[in-house]
Image (cartoon, rainbow, N blue to C red; front, top):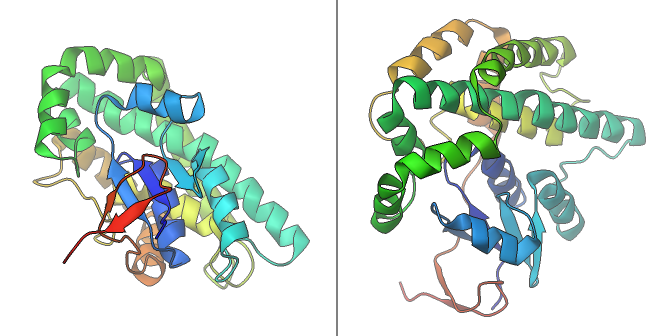
Length: 268
């Protein structure tokens, strides 16, 4: 039997978008956590360097937004795109806004600050959900990986400070967009709600997030979390997780093909 395979960084909030969509639509799938050596594999699969990547019927799809679009076509029920055309455009516009205005900004603030003040905590967070070998490799390559990660995601003192402003703007946008239904678009859960909540997960840290880092929250992250905790959008994201994150559709299998074409169920 063939299942979709998701290549992901477990702690990544963009990967969480894709995982949540798979789980919301109850699509059985395999998850592969890629470690520090993901770059050549991602480039081999898609010609670019980003995760998550979903293998669907042997085709590699990169980018959480494109993955959700493909899943919406594969399994339109339950929907993430509103049926009404105007509401659908608004939901997709909000998805794009949160991707660009919240996701990258929050990563810069949290990881950039950790690299600067608590580098060991940064590597602990980034290797969450990976096996022992991947964690050891990240530790051995930590000086090189830190530089690569900063360059790859444009993380520096300026983008960290600008990120704080953009995160605040995104929280205000959520509060402004919410209707009486407590959804961002219309009267039901959509890709807009999923995206905003998933991209806030690194700071909200809802218990429903499937790969919470172990141990205490790093001091710098905890301080920033305290700054934002009183914002209405913070509580809203926790509420969305509580009511709509649901259960995992991940299945335990032993993949025989990196592209997810041939898969054999693992004996229980």
